Length: 215
Image (tube, rainbow, N blue to C red):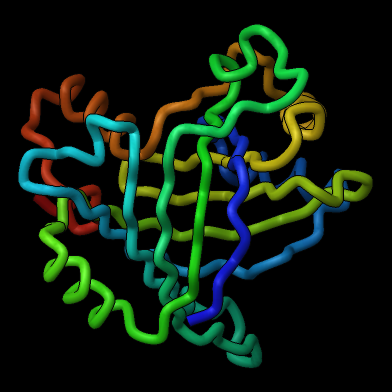
């Protein structure tokens, strides 16, 4: 098990109305692909009484697998599993007023695990159960001059989003470059966005999976 350092994760989401236009903007901005398109299968775990959610905590197993190859000579990315724990953010020195309203800020701990299924059995043994599953396709980009910013294009069953993760100043600059205003930024999780989608559609929430489109 390889440990990654803890940090405050700072990000926003932007709804993408036209994915082709967004890709054209990224090309004009000379965006570089950090990770080609992959498939993510995410499972959130919680106690039967939702104790983690009540304390703004999250435990997730993410399985990343290769996405469809656009060309036959494009190498496939090997599958990997990541265990993530998120919690309310640690206080930051000099934090500005309204900072946590404008951006989604959480403390994050991650480790790569050898077997996501076995990790699920371990969490079950600790009294945790799958609470929500969601999947998406993700492509990760970087922009010249914004080395600490990740632009993650997420294709989900409820639409396409861009996640901007990094320093607030870099997030703001990237959003402007992509044609978005500060009012376009959202801080909800995909689970929250899915809940709002279900209320608008008058359907009962379950898991956020691509196959739900076929119902």
